[in-house]
Amino acid sequence: MKIDYEQILDRAELYSKDIFAFLRDMIAIPSKSGDEGAVIQRIKKEMEKVGFDRTEIDPMGNLLGFIGKGKHVIAFDGHIDTVGLGDPNQWKHDPLIGYEDNELIFGRGASDQEGGIASAVYAGKIIKDLGLEDDYTLIVTATIMEEDCDGLCWTNILKDTNLRPEFVVITEPTSCHIYRGQRGRMEIKVSTSGVSAHGSAPERGENAIYKMAPIILELEHLNKGLKDHDFLGKGSLTVSEIFSESPSRCAVSDGCSISIDRRLTFGETVESAIKEIKSLEAVRIANATVELYKYDKYSYKNYHCHADAHFPTWLIEEDHPVTQSLVDSYIKLFDEKPVVDKWSFSTNGVSIMGMHGIPCIGFGPGHEDQAHAPNERTWKSELIKAAAMYTAIPNLYVEKYAKKMPSAKK
Image 1 (spheres, rainbow, N blue to C red):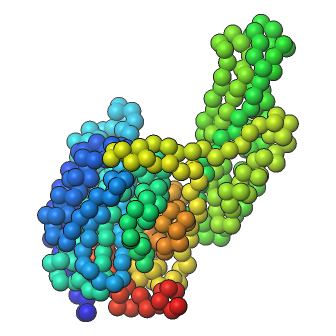
Image 2 (image 1 turned 135 degrees about the horizontal axis):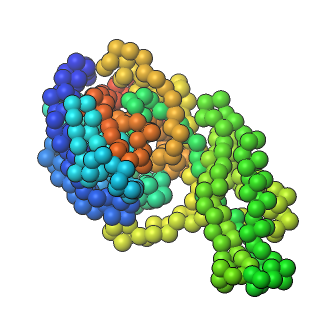
Image 3 (image 1 turned 90 degrees about the vertical axis):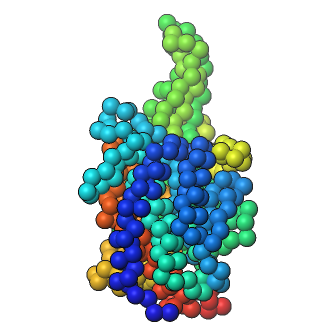
C-alpha cells in the first residue's frame, strides 16, 4: 500500500483542535491511580466517536481500542492515571481546569501522559479516514495504575486476554524523540531492630536509629561504584524514606527502616542488587533485614493487583526492525533524522519487554521534566507530530519490517 505522508501530516493538522479539546477533557477528570474509571469512560467515548472498530475494558479496568483485523498485532500504550496535584499554591493555573495558549496546554497529565493517548486515538481516526488499514490489528491501550506499579497493567492484560502484540509503542513523553530503553528499578526496604529503654537512661537500651546511621553512609558510598552501561548509563540508589518506631518521644527507638530507590542498568539484577546491600559491613553488624517491597491494592474495578516491587531493565537494539520502523517513519514524515535516546524514568516497558519479551519502543509528545511537576504542560506541535507518527508506523512496519522480525525468521 502506497502511503501519502503529506496527506497524513495534513490530517493530523486538520484534527489538531479536536486533539487539544480531547486532552483538556481528560485533564479535567481526576484520575489518580486506582480511581481512573471516569477518564476510561471518556476515552472509550472518544474512540467510538472517531470510528474504532470495537472497544473493551479488561477485568483490571484497562481500556483497549481496536482497529483492523490483520495478522500483525501492534499496540500503542499510554497510561492514563496521574499522580496527585501537590501544593496547589505552586500552580499558576488550576491543574484540572487547565489552560492553553497558542503553544501549550497546561494541567495534570498533560505530558505524563494523557497527551500520548489523545494523539494515538486521533491517529486511529486518520487511519480510518485515509483507508490505511492493512494486514495489521492496531490496539490503543489506555492503561491504569502505572504511577503506582509500572507494568502491572500489562502483566494483567497478557494474563487475562489472548493478546500478544508483535511490538508496543509506548507513548510516554519523549519530546518526540525515539526512546529505545530505560533502566529498571527496585523498591527496597532495610530494617534494623533495637531494644527500648527510657530516654533518660539510653545506655539501658539499643537504639535502632543509631544502627541505621552507618548503613545509610555505606549506601551513599555504594551508589558511587555501581555498574555503568554505555547507553543506559549508571545504576544508582538513593535513600528515599526513613521511619522509626518507639514507645514514645521519651524512649530509645526499637525499630528503624529506610526505603531505597534502586535504579538498575543493563546487566544488573534484583539478586545482585540485594546481595550488594546485604554484603555491606554495617548491614551485617546490625543484623539488618533487606527485602523488596510488595505492591498490593485493588483497581477501580475491584481487581486485586499485587506484585513484587521489581521493574526490570529493558533495551531494544538500534538496528532492530521495530526501532528502524520508527526511524524510517520519522524520516519519511519530517524529512530529518530523529534523535534516538532513552528514558531516565520507568515505563510500562518493564513488564512488556522486561518481563515478557515483547519488543518496546518509545515515542510521545511532552517532556520528561514535566512529569509530576507543578504547572505541568505539553506542546501542541508535539501532539500533532505524534498523531502523524502513530498513523504512519503500522503500515510502514507491515510493508517493510515485519518480515525482518526475529520471530518471522523462525
